[in-house]
Each structure stands twice: as C-alpha cells, then as structure tokens.
Length: 275
Image (cartoon, rainbow, N blue to C red; front, side, top):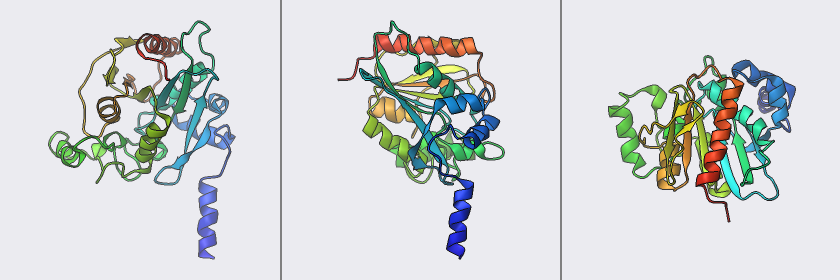
C-alpha cells in the first residue's frame, strides 16, 4: 500500500504529458518566467527529453530540423534557476527559429532546451543551484576539475553556496544530460543564456561576435567546471554566452529580434557548415 501511495503521489506531482503544450505545464512556466505567456509556451510544442531533474521534473526540449540542415546549434537557457529571463529568451528565439530568413546561406538544425534547471526555477524563491545545491555551470568535467574547482570555490568565491561545484564533475543529472547530449548531438555552436551582467562572453575557436543587440563582447575569463571552459576550450566547440541585463525582465521585442539577427549573421560569417 505504501509503495502504491508513493507512485500515485509521484504521478500527481509530475504528470506524464506528451509535450509542454499541456496547459497545466505552460501555466506553471508562465507564472514564473517573465515575458512568457501560456500561449507562447504551448506554441513551442516542447517534448520531454530523456532526462529528469533531481526532484524528478521533466526537462523539456525541441528540435527544429530542416531537411537540408548543414549546421547544428544547441541553445540552453535556465541553467541557473533564478535567471528567469534566460528561459524566456530561449522560448522567444525558438519561435523565431521556426521562420528562418529566406536569404540565409545556412540551414540550421536547432536544439532548444529553455530550462535546464527546473528545480531551481520552481524553488520558492527561485535559486541559482539545482535541488542538490550544485551550480550546474561549475559541474562540467574540465581538466584538473578535482583540484581546480574546489580550490576556486574556496579561495575565489569564499565558499559561496550559490557557486558550489559539487563533489565531482557531472554529479548532477542535469549537467550529465547536457554533457551526454553534446557528445551525441555534436553541435557546431553552443549558445548559453544567462543573466544579469549585461555582456556577451565567448569561449573557443573562431572570432567571437563583437555584439548581439546591445550586448557587447566582454570576455570575462574561464572558470573551472563551466560550460564555456568545457565546451569552448576543452572540446573546441564555440560557446556564445549571453548575459542579459536583468534576471527578471526580458528585453523588448525589437531587441530580442536584433540579438537573434546578429547571432545568425555572425554564424553565417564565421562557422563552417557541418559535413
């Protein structure tokens, strides 16, 4: 009887749905994410990925894949649960990706993960870390992680609990899923959306974009266990890191579109099509 009760409770907390167009899911997300309406969420038609958060929440994603796609781009928002605007921007860019410019020289296979850290997003209040208290953006297996990540946390952050890297790399289901996805999807570009520093960062090969909209390039360095360090420096995949000016407010529609067009323009100029 106790086992059945636990099963029924789990189903009640995390209902099984086929996509994030489910009204209940979209109402929940729209209630926490600035600039995200239930209608925009439903239109995104996200699918449940083969991943769950620490607390068992679904992690949602969506592929937009033209038949003639010659480039693969991974867009990740909500790695930090209290950077709600990053989730919103991913949804709005997904809508733009469905209608690519007719004159674009590239045909891109997009993979969007708007909210990698749903436990952090739905905590009250929302928090940077996942449910285990780990900063997912310090949990990737960069070289010498065991030495450098703990040392950086202790000496540079003064043991800031918001930046705890975990006990070992990829200790968290969310970061492990993204790591494994990078291995299977093999993106030519990763776009990681954050807030609230209002700058554009870049790691890896290629000439970085000088700006996206009103965000100008300001390469802030690399951190042990960060996605930029792991993907851009260690794996050689360009990582564009967007730091929106506010964690709780999304830029105006025109600015969102300008950032998107600047990203497409830089991608066409600097990245080689996939073979």
